[in-house]
Length: 336
Image 1 (cartoon, rainbow, N blue to C red):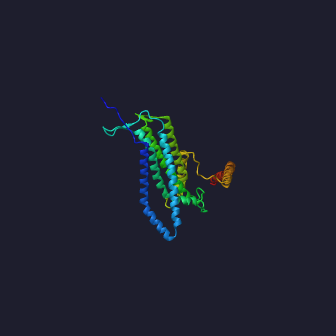
Image 2 (cartoon, rainbow, N blue to C red):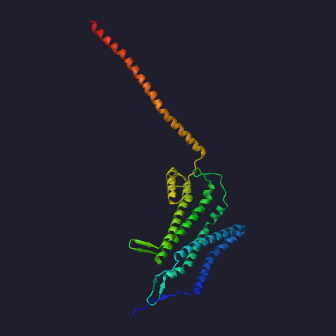
């Protein structure tokens, strides 16, 4: 007689929430003690120089940036994880780690771990984003240089202050979206909303829609990175003998990246619109070329007429020479 399969019950919600609070406090204390000594030393050094405001500006910028990124990343990840776990699972995945222990409902466990997992990853991403505080402050207090580049006709300050911030933001969004996509796929496979049987893959309609939206978002972000980051990077390229856009960059890579950007997403081309004076010059040049081509047949006719007149004159001039030669021959025969 086989023993019935027992399902292990997870701790009560109060005990679980209390344990999560304790873990969060320990994590905060660890971060404080690891960085507190360095912060105190830097504060004393800035205070001795009279630049307390510089130090506080840096701390405020890092705190605001870290909290903003942490909140946005947590909201995005948690929403996707909860969306991937919506509904009931008719056949949950049960795992027994030992013969005497009860089976653990992995599907239910993954649902409970969604909140701490999203929060932990968001905190790590927020801590990493605090390193870009200086670039963000430079972007917020940017000033134009008064000099435009000859390729895209943008102010040089755009490449110094704006492009680094856009590149960091798009890279962060691509990384978070990729993680959300992989986590959603794993959860759907765990819940058996995605079933792989031989060479056939069956995807539940709601899961298909969710994954399609994430994949489309990835393509849009890649197209934005090409338009806002990859194209401006050609101006300080190092592929040629000097730093800057070379002939190959402008005539090969620029064209290829523009074509790839058009194919990756509905983003407009970065090619500047033709100026009115350039268009007028082009139309005038085309008119001159067309007039020259129309004038070519009359010139050819005049040339043929001149050649015919020269040929007739040459033939008429050759006739007296033949008669003179004949008379000279007859005179020579009659002399004896």
